[in-house]
Image 1 (cartoon, rainbow, N blue to C red):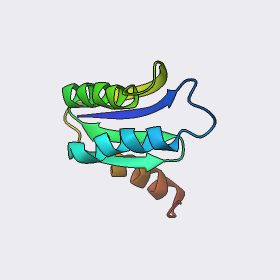
Image 2: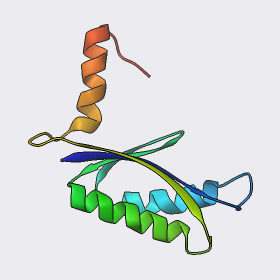
Image 3: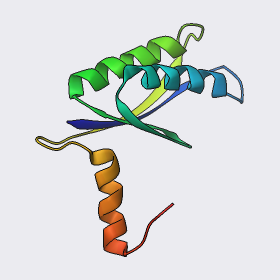
Length: 101
């Protein structure tokens, strides 16, 4: 399994890009993969091939009416592990002895 953290920013689309972010998140949501949206991007968990295909789909969705986008992506691949979206946070909370925001 793998985690993909990414953000897509259309270039030349003005100051507010929430309509493009919403378009990309809709693609993620409809994928059926487990994900977490946060203020600066999205983290998705799945098989590497599915995550790479999903990244391409989100880029295509944003580029439907944008000529250029900037994509930042980080991938963590770990054999034999799933549920990392929650497990990584839980591990840090256990070490601190408290729940985090």
